[in-house]
Length: 140
Ligand SMILES: [Zn+2]
Image (tube, rainbow, N blue to C red; front, side, top):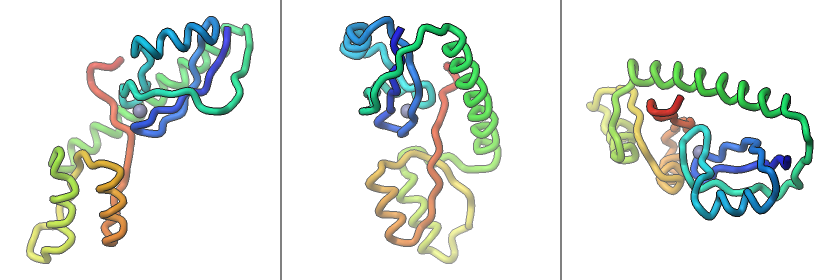
């Protein structure tokens, strides 16, 4: 068994994954079978760190449990956001600006999607946003 540290290009999540050998990694990557455990993105790549090779199945179980634990926390977090924030979808950057620049606009909490570029632009304008990994309901 070989352990690689994989990084998700979408949410920057770094996680460990086990493969029987380096060829298996290449194969799975080619077929897009590798996905981020947090945002389900397929843009997952091996980090440059050297792989750890270990033949302990216990470690794998531990990693899986840790992932489960994080996932359940993320789900709780998502529920909180859904109950307290207004979803604005892809209009996040636009809505955030409206709230920031229009004093008459209700100061409500919103959440939605934005690109890294949009987040950067908002930051430069002094609009603070929080980024967090999202988890889809279909994932268990
Ligand atoms: Zn991700």
